[in-house]
Image (cartoon, rainbow over all chains, first blue to last red; front, side, top):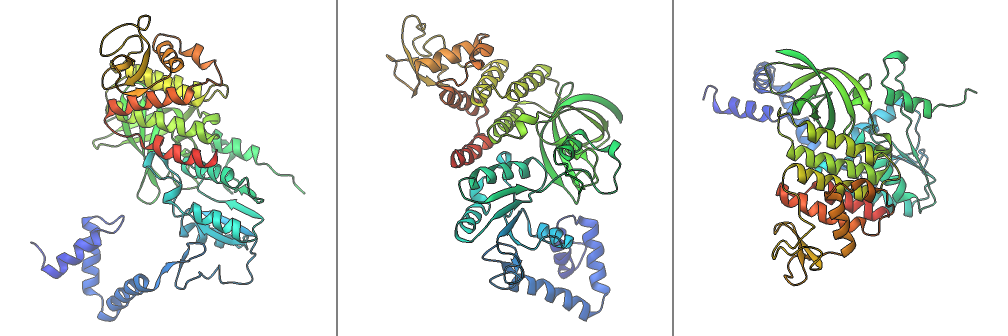
Length: 199
Length: 249
């Protein structure tokens, strides 16, 4: 063993993090060795706190510190619209737009037949229950615009069709600031299909 | 280290790092190849729409020292739009891709298999064709290409022909259809046996033109069982897909 056991243990733990290889793990471990004790303790406390306090919202499955997340417990949010996303990170992305005022539902993934991920592996049953039990007028399916996300949206549209709720899909098309000539034909095709009237 | 061009169909993709993807391709000239597409998950990527599973593309690849080749340029040949906008057809296409992923060997050219896959996706893209029959026909043709197609012309145990005995059972491990006298395997209808026999003997186009076919699900079931037995593994996309198709039908 090249390092003392405690340093080696730290390197081993850091290496288990996503995107961290052996060299990066060594570099971070050395950094942690030289910073002052308070900074290191603050990092350790943050990790401990997040593991002890954070859980999933019982209603929308977003990450939360309480039974209900900040969005679900906010009375100013519109209760009749649910935006369905794959991951909690997607909630943050949509919240940054400041355009959506309804509630969310985090599926925890998308349908992926090749990986054996079916409806039972993600929070679809819970979404169905919410639509049945709450007064919902619209479900906006905001899964990723890839094959798995599209399969999930098609499935949700079929599943929710017997209920009196409007199921919509977020638009996909050209990125703002991009050049039309560089767009691939599928994205451009969707942009043309999803065109809107200029008022 | 060199750059080369090929045609390929995307079999599946895996996330890699922050914004990259590993793209597994069934290529026309080089068998199965694993490639990396840099930055494809970013919304600014100009190639992400072209590299979705089941897209047929023309690519320029860079083969370096590592296992993964790098995608330099991509053009769409066929994106199979009808397949990707219908849940049942999409699931059928993915079940085809899963079988090809298992059968096609790394960097071992099998042009026949590529052509067959491309053709099957074109059939599936045609809304008049029953997806179950397309999948069954594809699996049976693929097994024929592998030299392990089931028989539907005689009893696999007593060898008596279909003109002499009723072929009423099916067991791929025994070789295919089995007569009522030998009595082994799973019961199969006469219509399904006739359709499988036609599919294996150049009559696939005729069978596909019968829409809806009275026993398309039964034929799909036996073709899938045969493929799974040949691969010695369950096809995940078939099992998962069946669950969600049954809950929405």
